[in-house]
Image (cartoon, rainbow, N blue to C red; front, side):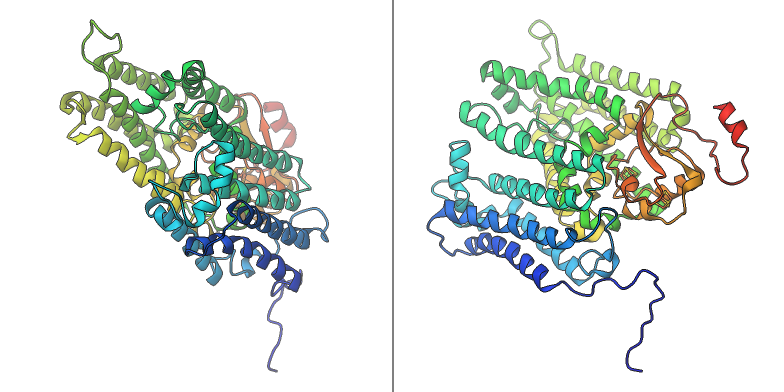
Length: 527
Ligand code: SF4
Ligand code: SF4
């Protein structure tokens, strides 16, 4: 009588613990991390290049070995078995330990890099010194804390990308998408900017896949001066920066939805999809979370628009005989552009916007009133009553560091893997706005096939209740959907399909209950 099986599950029991081989693989990966940790605590590793190579190989080897043990003996298909029984992936003890450890790492990285061994005037020590040989080989400069972070970030995307591909090997979309994020992170974010720095030292560091407003600092005076003084390459980069905001991004979002960026290119999305995959089920699906998401993400967009306008405004002149683009002309231009976008959305897309129309209207009026205030209350170097630098630094600290790093990644094991993309990323918000109004992307649902298992909602990292749409046979057109395709990959009935098609009939408000009381011939004829 001391033990009896209380479970009524037909599917058998989840594995209670890791096998011995899995423990060894975990140990191998952590021994790579331990080298970096010991170096941070001042242990001397004389041959830095060798120890850094060993550390990265151990991490990579540990993850690949663990992956092979987990998936190589299983057939292709959905493999999320046991996620709610494992402490690490169900907000249990190990989940909290991992969250605290990653958060601590981010706090040290952003605010106390000297603990990692950063020496501004002189030779690096500790963990940062381990990465000096690689940094010198790529850019010719000693490593900084950002180089160490970039290397570990790329390593995480590559190692866990392999794990992700193995896990979802039944799905071609997931395989190609993951190869894409691995490529963009390695080439565009890591290698090319370092090599550019070697070729031309005056070019500002430019992660080519970062687009405004994600790189909100891109149009600051020191960067623009840096681009202009670096000859043709610098000028080409500046033009590329502007084109990517106004031409490349709108065209691609129109054709493919925001997934082209959030799930195929972006580094934050890349890390969330690969290293964060084990935590996707933790996203909050409640209506309350959806409301908070709308308020927070729209406020971030208003703030970043104002801040960028204010920063550009602060270095324009007033003299019309010297510059055609004066402070006043610039503000009039921004006001006109915003009015055009807002007017178009309200005139032609009000129905599709539904609740978002309210947020849009509020956001628009806040921006316009702030722009008028900007004109009235700003002096030389000042924006409203603050220094322009203070405004930018506050944004950099609150959104760029605390939200995207400390909370966005540190809280993966507690709040899910897309907290930043969902609640804080201004780029995702702007792309989402276009995705909802002017894009060919939608997820179609074959409602009659749905068995309401809820797999899709559970594994939607953006907290969308996908099942609710599937049960009604309604297209999913949501601003927040990043097009990761996992809902479709985990659906056992093939109900969901990510598609690009004509704009007409994309958002069908009159939901169809296929499989219930519906005359299919009438429905087909009315389409
Ligand atoms: S609805 Fe599907 S494709 Fe969109 S974010 Fe959620 S899981 Fe990914
Ligand atoms: S759409 Fe698929 S995964 Fe979602 S509830 Fe229906 S059958 Fe389950």
